[in-house]
Image 1 (cartoon, helix red, strand yellow):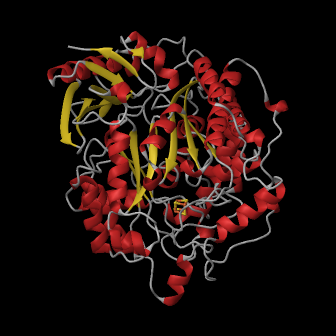
Image 2 (cartoon, rainbow, N blue to C red):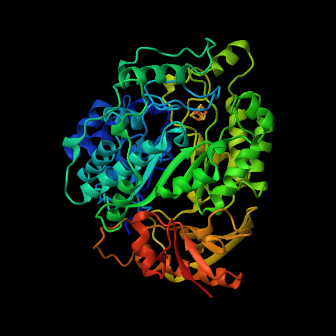
Image 3 (cartoon, rainbow, N blue to C red):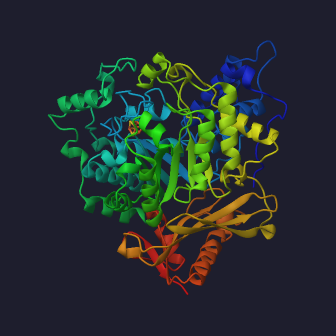
Length: 598
Ligand code: SF4
């Protein structure tokens, strides 16, 4: 495998941030255009010289990328991190996770939440800001799911990035509040774009986006002026005025049959969907909603827990309590979903000490224990109602040392089976009225953990990425933990240095649950093997997923489930992984695939 890029150990990019950030963004743009050659890079470096000392080196650009952009799984640069590094280092593009993430946004739409910290950018789906790069891409495509997906695939392919295994991440407001027919249409259009692109078809000419141009919406929200739910009022009025009295026109709806046909076609498409993610509120995850999300093809849910302190939730007008989060997590777990929680320190009514205690509950409480976690300290945005509280002196952003303590304490507590995907939301500093504007806080917090003599053990800190390893020295380890409605077994292949090469999440439910199809079955919630994403016909036997690690993890899970008395093993497979599971002996039983064990 190609070695990882080396960065200069004694180079601190912080003092050079404006120049280096400009270089990173310009390089990313050239890569996206397929136009980064040595001349283009030289021109960029000349435009952003190092004050009085010549030009920055490739290693220094990479150091800047790692400091400020690497954490952004959803790609604020507009290209995957692997493509950026490959472009700067001039080596072939490969994804280290084996999967290409593709983010799509739903259109602006009312949200049932009234959260005081939430931005009210009426040009965007609730909680997003129109100067975020991913949001700008969505707006340029009029929030049309087909155009967003197809154009993103084209951009990836233009830079030589593999597009055979794609994870669709649907962002925007509260997914479960959009009408079912819109949800079905949105998912179907994503699958249709994958299928068309893989087949060399371009259906963009037939797309006439129904969503209005939200930039034409003149109203801007000032968070200091009290008004109940201004976003919902303005967006509802704008949509119904432009769409003849409805919020969702017939052209943005579809029947389930259309989605199911697109899903079936995707099973053998050249661009396969290997993960489908939606984000929603805990109090909207009823059993019926969980089933609906599964029918859409979802495998993971991003769930806004934000806090487990009922007083803090009430102060921020979340509209649900911690009990709703526990109930939602239980339903998702029983249905086999991967659970990606969002947690927010520095909310209205919280304190640094209270946040340290609250974070501990995420993992001390068996009813929560998420698989993945985003830690987004509350930021003050001009359109959010939090502005009024700030003006009255009810809320202030934590000082640097307070935030550092909260985040370092938090990261040190994360167990080895959870992946912290992001620390600090990448909001433009122009949007933050006051408070922390550093986006490399994760690195600062990790350094603080090390300074205190601790070590971050979450998956992201240990995953092998593109590094070399000796497959003969891998150990298969199991961590068993209580997750309330199920016993969880986290199986991992790890190097002697504790680096993860692949893992599997096995859930052994303690109750029958609400899905008759999988009553009495053990459940594989996730199989992940690191290594370059390869074209479907490629062979590269030095890469983990071609060494059979995934199959060995499944066999170990089957053995353990049988030993625990289960007669069937189910898997929440993504549409595009169904073939792989068939080869492992699973057959489709409806929403899941299963095989007999024991
Ligand atoms: S539920 Fe989410 S999107 Fe809706 S107001 Fe609250 S934070 Fe914003």
